[in-house]
Length: 77
Image (cartoon, rainbow, N blue to C red; front, side, top):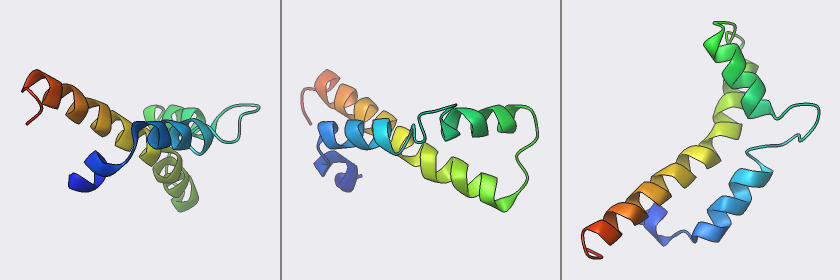
């Protein structure tokens, strides 16, 4: 987890907004793939790879924000 702690929040946010939402039109891939997942239509390997590629920045950003919040609550430990 030290790797995530060392990443700047601004860099993770920029990566999540660019790679995580690309392509921007007509619909971001991550939104499309999450819809496919919830509808039970996510079965092709390329679609699974797409979800992982476009979803990973959001997961890393969430982990970073949670860890930052926890460290502030615990007094910076």
